[in-house]
Length: 104
Image (cartoon, rainbow, N blue to C red; front, side):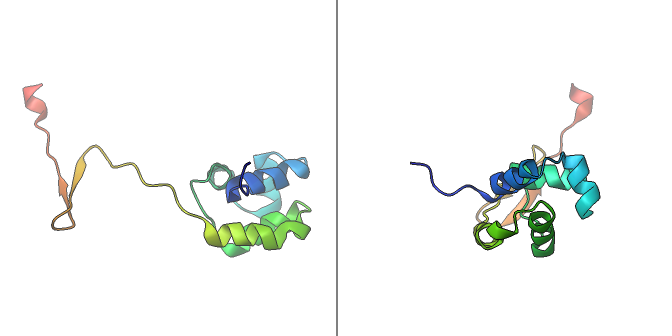
């Protein structure tokens, strides 16, 4: 049995229910299209007013309470570490590795 849908999937369903592309939703809500993509894929949580506007503008207002519950419970996926930095867990300080390109 599958649990409740994540926030991004719920937002995507609202957009598709309204028959909108990401670009059309962007024009309607004022949310940049690249942010819409990031919200739907779960990379971003977004602001409360953006989520509320999205839901209202796509005709999914009856689902607002459930979507806002998902918004409150959103957990951002862990950030992939950059290849040029390492975290020293003992001190909590980030170390930057320096590569000597002349030896290549």
